[in-house]
Image 1 (cartoon, rainbow, N blue to C red):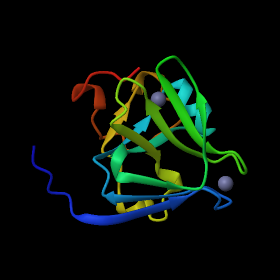
Image 2: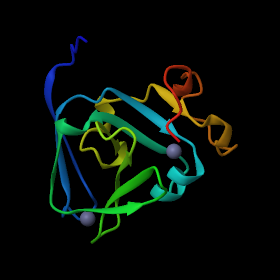
Image 3: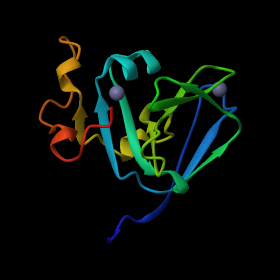
Image 4: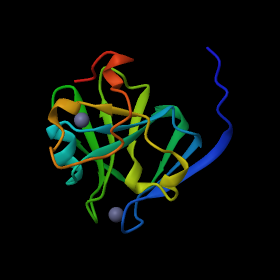
Length: 140
Ligand SMILES: [Zn+2]
Ligand SMILES: [Zn+2]
């Protein structure tokens, strides 16, 4: 499998700065997730995640974990509460980092929607983007 993504350093942190991350590549993709669980987990109208290979992301500081279901967990800062990532147990080789925690989210625009059926009706965002489920199996 070819990987032509440039070697870059992608950085971000929680609100208080106690937890930071550093990725050694650009994300594979950025996806707006509209599912109820992600929405609650981040406390926003939509949860936008950048997908990375887990081994390309280094966490600095203590990432707290909450098991949100049998299949998934959420990573956050236990000091300020910032939601930092989503992990899907059947795919431990991937990590989904919240785009809002990025130092430069403008560099990585979203490319997909997930669970558009659950989208808040008044939210109008990147309507032209395709559904991620057309490209991969559902991760719920
Ligand atoms: Zn924090
Ligand atoms: Zn979701």
